[in-house]
Image (tube, rainbow, N blue to C red; front, top):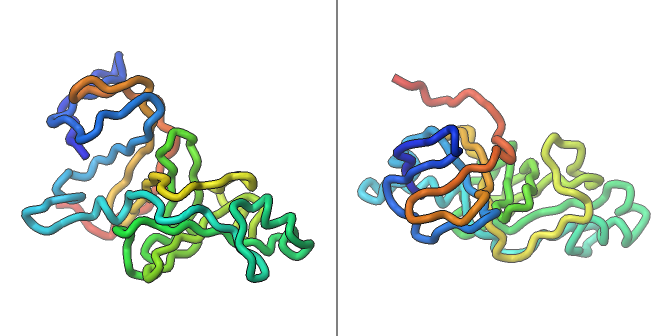
Length: 203
């Protein structure tokens, strides 16, 4: 995470106050939010919301039906007529930093930050696991505005960002070329999180 100190609209280029721990390469995903950096993470105050909304998957995408697990909805639907008729449910094991409260991410959108542009609505969230049930076209949790393709697979260790409408609005982007130092070039927004009114009033 880094704070943007300036933005050149003509060149779609940002300058960061500090260098990133790992310089991005072409196609890497990233999110931009208007929330102050100390709202997301402030070690001095033991604040770390950043790990709640971003991380790497602890397991691969799993689509389940009739007690069997599959790596994609396509494979799941092919296992039986009942599964093909929308009986499959797909879920992703989130990183260890994900919220432990059930339902905290329900209704949010999970974006894959691997440059694929994949995004899916979170239809259920189990904090104990932690696992997010995600919308996949043709599944029991399909017909959402944001959903993965039926053939989509997600490997263990896939990086993601989840919108947090209760905390901040963010837009997801992909870099168009390798960053140099503390500068990075924008591409157009791939997607944006749901717009909801924050319960926290601004003064």
